Amino acid sequence: QVQLVESGGGLVQAGGSLRLSCAASGSISSINAMGWYRQAPGKQRELVARIISGGSRMYADSVKGRFTISRDSAKNTVWLQMNSLKPEDTAVYYCNLVAKNWAEEYWGQGTQVTVSS
Image (cartoon, rainbow, N blue to C red; front, side):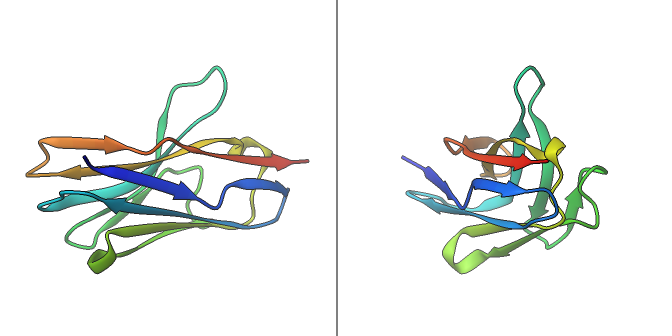
């Protein structure tokens, strides 16, 4: 069973930084992409950042210039560096992995990020 374990969430004041990590384990043949989604209360889950196996990255407009996604392919690990955090960044952040020619998708349990004003 593929498992995604997130860590690094917490409470931070506006303007602060957090670094989320996600480690994938289990039987994983090939990874197409890993990324981060977030979901705030009463809102839909949205893609925050994604890095594709070829190396390209994408970010939601709301986090461009503030968040950076990185990966260690050998360890099947992805990080999300979050700087200049805003209260509107408050959400549960979920790690996402897509594999086997985009046919399989996995999710972590989520880690809470709370930004106080």
